Image 1 (cartoon, one colour):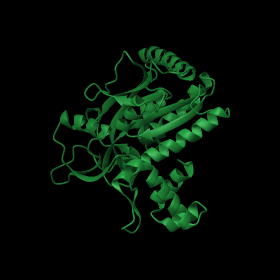
Image 2 (cartoon, one colour):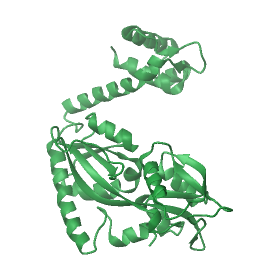
Image 3 (cartoon, one colour):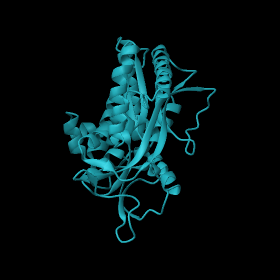
Image 4 (cartoon, helix red, strand yellow):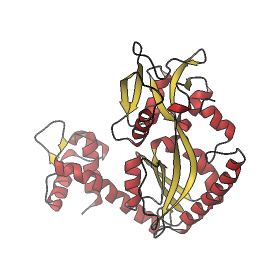
Length: 327
């Protein structure tokens, strides 16, 4: 096995053309083709469907594509570690977390956390909730940061996984603003139903919206207008006036402060969701243990401050949360 075979294969899979891939790899097309054939011979399967244009992967090729990327990563990380660079050693922490938290909350969190954890190197895996949990359980992330709700819990064995609460994130309905007021208001009307900007089927936040609607104070007159896995996509559509989107308050906070969004419904249309950080008790390295201890101390301070009407979410002030919630 030659690592160049993997690099050639991934370039070809991305480009969909032997010519384009050869140019990207600074190689001749015949040479790249021979290396792809050598890789196929080594694996004993065909990776490329050469009967179609643009070049496509066979079913085996699609499966191997993810493995090839991971193999290259492991080789590079191993070399860097042996040369003394921080990769998966004690000074790097890999986080897996949902896009919504990675974009809105994590930059603020990390600025605070690293000061108390000897400034480790950070690696971020931002994905959906399901995949973030899968990555963490598979051992590819040191810390999982994830939403949790009693009616849609994340099942992780407490005997194996330690967890610390980072606070509460509210899921609220937002609409574009006009003259300081929301364009759309819940529950809508039979003659003027509200266009809904929804999460894709199976998405965690989508299930949370379902819970809100199931316990809604009155009938919701609405129709589907758009669907996406990403809260930030729905945020952009809501700002443009395409409908109502239930968004984590951190995602909507900036647009609310700028007057672009307003709440489309009161607290009866909102839902609090806990945010937890998890670590594997059996495989935590020193940097991870120090970080979780930091988070535990912060959680204890948050609890004391909450008793006095203080913080609701790590890294956010009460005023920040009021602005983010549209109060």
